[in-house]
Length: 454
Image 1: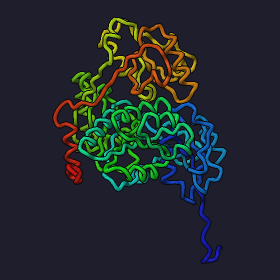
Image 2: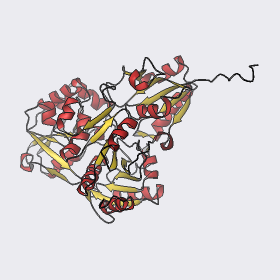
Image 3: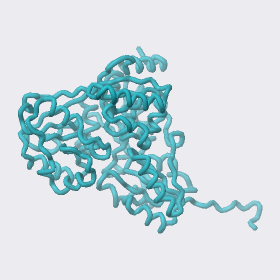
Image 4: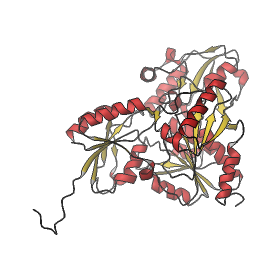
């Protein structure tokens, strides 16, 4: 037996983190990076193309990982678990059906590993500033427009606002450790993908400042230096990386029956202080009642707010009577599960003679997207995670037999793709649609924290 003064050997747990270049890196940074009793042997990647085959770099991974950490495709989960004798599989991405999540759990357990979900207490950072978090039950409910509405309202009250966006680090991870975007040229300099531009451009155009990246403790510290209040603009249906003092979750009146079917959207719903039912202006009353009942069953103490998402076109006459190709917000249509979005609704409402099906002109990379997401209707998701995908998107648009391109993705697509095809922008913003209204509820929160009139 070892001498009584000899420390017992510590078993080092071997861990695989399943992710999509976001929550996975955050969980590693906060929970595992500096823990000598853990070795993360790999990240797996899903949902986003082109993020496998990289390594989480040593500069971010820390001294326990001098060679960094490999990022492999999720399809290789069982192989890496068995080959590397993984003790735990940590699931760390969002907007997945509960049923599919348990299939992944079963795959993990079948290799002999534990299956782990890390919760808010272990993964949320604490800010020195008051924090408002905007999250959602599903991708595409309207988080971004709600966050923009709140950012503008807070700035109009004289507050310095830092918007922290859920991560989208699909490029050089080390270069993306801490990112600050205050001008459109900042987006060009950072070589942002279309998905990043969809989220950042509208905030910047409205006068906001965005923080994002990989290392959210460093990002939060940088944001706190120039802000009175932190506004978390969530991604997919994930919960916040920063502990909120006010948690606002968005539900979708057009998608009843989904409030408790997806992870971690159910967690978001059950933990929210305010739940906004968005798109009530375009949903049947029966849908609104159904979503209301779901919210009340899961979180009876939450305040429910009704909101509208009115869609306007920059040039309605350019659409009326024309053959229209509709380009929608990418994540809403792909892993968000929506067959179409605001652009399709606007094209119909403003009298398009024909909705042109993009499949007829789709480049091979775009055809593969339709095969992967067969629920998509006759619309084109704005995808552009790399140069190849952006080129395929451009070819699909330019080869379409359309008179006009109606873009409902919230970015300047003409500039991003350098196309001369005639483009009409569809825009949609948050609007209160009843009482209680979100603005006064937030004002009350600010008053309680000594920020109203500060």
